[in-house]
Amino acid sequence: MYCKYCGAKLKDEHADCPKCGKNNRLNSSDDAKDFRFALLGFLVPIAGLVLYLVWKKDFPMRSSSCIRGTAAGALLYVCLPVFIILSFVFGAAY
Ligand SMILES: [Zn+2]
Image (cartoon, rainbow, N blue to C red):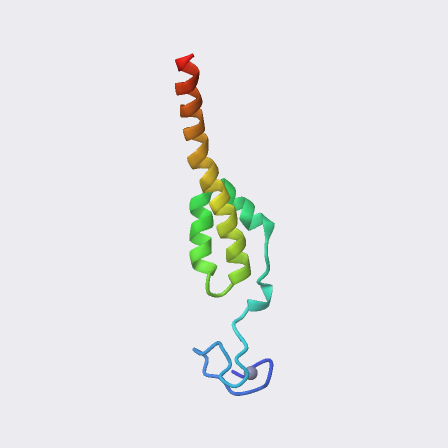
């Protein structure tokens, strides 16, 4: 295979061009911030975390959307029960 940017010959297993340094992996141009994956991570933090780990290398932008949504979702799921418990405890004290 040949580099699609500069035409240098590449070994298939080396996706990054040794000459110009650009990434020749398939679909790498599809990488973008994507709100849908952030939302998925928010609703299903485990799925967001898995997608982040899978995409971290090939789709850095998309995986960062995932991990942001996951972090927000995880924070909510951790904070919400704590908030409910605290409001119950303090509510019961009055
Ligand atoms: Zn190149």
